[in-house]
Image 1 (cartoon, rainbow, N blue to C red):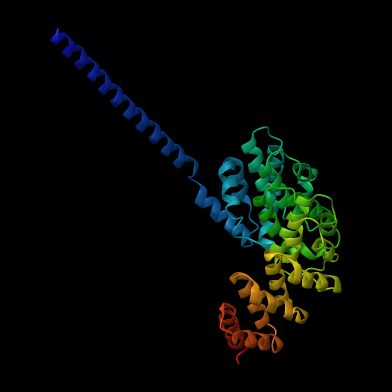
Image 2 (tube, helix red, strand yellow):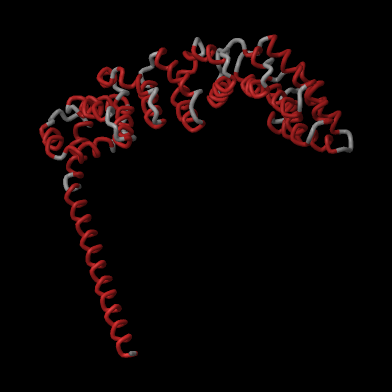
Length: 357
């Protein structure tokens, strides 16, 4: 009985060993096949790159390029798109014109209608690059406009980035309105693309969103403006500073240092320093220091004496930005023996060193 059981166990072990050996050779054969296919599909990549580099350098001989585009189209497209991050200006236009001439742009427009999500995403990503060139934008036409309503956020993002390159105020306005309704990540990416058009957008699109009745979009729009970190020709900020919505008030306070200091804005900043909560005090103190608001000296002194350590430090720094009266206030407080005196003395020292005194 034992001999039979050992015999059966030996057979099973032998079969298992054969199975493992067969699996090893199958995996090895598959890996070898993949390597061979990989080598085969990339054979002409260096030659394609060289031909494209010569073309971008000014060569008008397209014979090789057309041959590569006809015989090795997939590899040619991959090589062409490798130049996306390395060319600009006339070289980029020349590259985009080549993509248009070889019907690549038309291919991507057709792919944009695919039901395969990955194909559509890839198509719009490629279109977002070539649409920096106006003739390519004409070919893409209404495709990009319609894609702003696509269910796929990546498609919406690529279409929006393509439209931004037109510089057309209507299209820029549509992209800005899209940005404030999207996720934080998409908003950040589009905000960077829209930054250079800030002045144009402040004429109509931005005021329309800020005066709208959607608090979430108002807050998102204010966050974009703050992220731009540039002076903005924006009117009506006092209405947002006086909003019933606390989130809107806080974002408006962050923006206040970047817009013109009107009498209404000045009055509200002083009110926040006197009557606001800790966060409002902090933001108002930062703005007062940035704008060197002399009327804020008494309120800043109060924040330094009675506020938290963070607020006291910000108020002291604001006072240090406003010599000589701000320095005099810091000297008076520094004469004491409490924590406020230490903070005031340190801020005064920094202010003097910064001024070279």
